[in-house]
Length: 272
Image 1 (tube, helix red, strand yellow):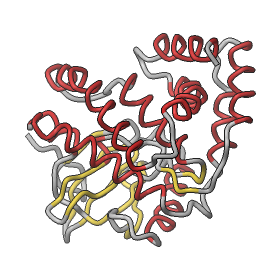
Image 2: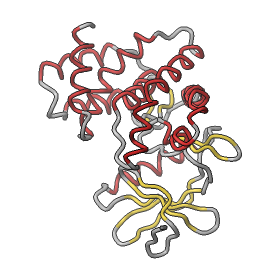
Image 3: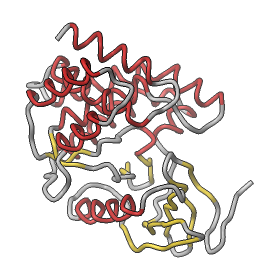
């Protein structure tokens, strides 16, 4: 059964920070929850303008609105299921989608991130504020972060199969709220951490079970294709970035992720 709010059409999708509603004239509204800080909306608008200047397949940003104390952004409507939902509905397409995700990630990293926040600086600030990370581990993670190389490539930093719509005209990348400029492997590491440890906040029990079933195969195929496209990159380099990225992920306080992430950080720092 579709849900409606004043001035909006049916509810199309639900995420961690916002709901997406249909709107007339080929548009949708990303309506942030009331608890979201107002600067998140402004940050996303500024990022959206940077992304629009690239050749990447992404919805156009039109305007903003406010409904019952909630702020929203009006985007071009792109019809099509997400890569995540299609992977569950048509598992025989799983490996194709995993390779496609790596190819799209490569396209992203070929763009300049100039004008966006610096990823290393943002990650450093986030890690410093993580309360559940013991001080000795935190210090070691921060030391490692400073040693890792840096670039100014465009990084999505929340890139996973639910952020790609499979539309008639081809795949379309959505939700650039977390975009930064930084090293491409930091962005790849974030995708790896989410595919390996991420917990879905929505969806049926059956959907979550299916995702947990195929996520390992999807991750391995994604990584294999990314390394194939970047012969000078090693898995070790990605793993090194996964340590501070996993530490930053702890700040999100997602149920079920804390202990696995802490184990990963401890074991990989010990072997570093």
